[in-house]
Image (cartoon, rainbow, N blue to C red; front, top):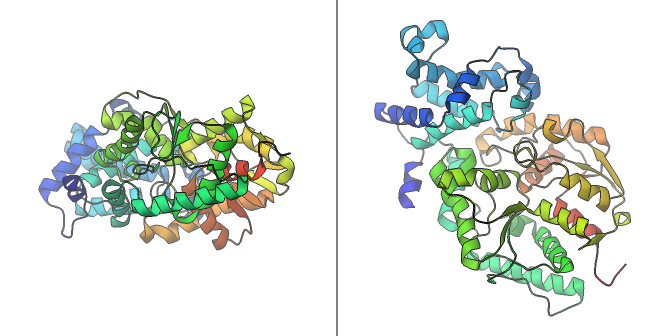
Length: 445
């Protein structure tokens, strides 16, 4: 573990030729033939520019997805194609050197949330986020991940969660939540299950919930109790997030996702349930098997899917009259565009609130809020991140909604900042919180 962390620590000196060769080797290894072939079919049509919240906010050339693509592709051409080796100027090939690596950091980390909206608007279907992550992997291999992002990864590796919350604090929070649940339900026998073996569900959460949004934990516990669910928390590994996805370091990413599988297997839970985190869903549901070279041996579901099942099966009831304010929905990129969880949250909101209105555009065509790709952790790019978020702020304002709901706590944080920055005057809530607010408790209502 120590070796993994040391290998990704940003260097204090200029990169060496040996490091450059290491970066090139990793970069090449992360690119498939299909991705490279598609990337070289870019026709410079410019449609991707209008799809990117960064370019829409600043109109800078460096923010255009095609620029980011070709910034990485130029290096591939120079080092891995004969035309690039012989006629670099003719094909736009460029060497990977100190200056290029620094531009990669600023552009491929600092101007991209890897949201994927450019890809669905690309006439050639180029997977630009995959190319960007390949370049990030190259930088991770030689310690050029922005230190703020790397520190978040390191915290998860060292402590088991990305906020380095001590286990005692996590357990204290759950104890307080248990007392609140008992008071709300009027039943002192109710317990928050921790490390209970043989349960159906192991529930994982974003550590920002125990740190800043404990009422989200209370809402989930209330819902599970109302549904008569067999479930448990893990006292050690409960963090659904995985910033290794954003840093580009597959070794760290695989280790972090492996923690959750380790907890599930140890406790013998049937299903790993991923709390409200877009990239956490994408990382653990789709990418972890590749990082760790092992097949999933148990179902992995989003809590949104679980809530949808409860409502569809009549295991819980909600009263939409309890939520009268107009509600709109922000679609997290990794949950929706990359993850395929699209209609479930809409079905839930249509049942749980009185006035639901869609943002335009929505679903797979939604605009990124700006908090993905590790942007929330990289404070050096915060001004750029907030400026790029104006696209989402304008979307929210046009709905006249008073409540913005999103099934992702990273999005909750970014939307909360946009709420303050652009004076939107809205409440930001998660799906679990909304269902908890509208829940009809057993024996009541």
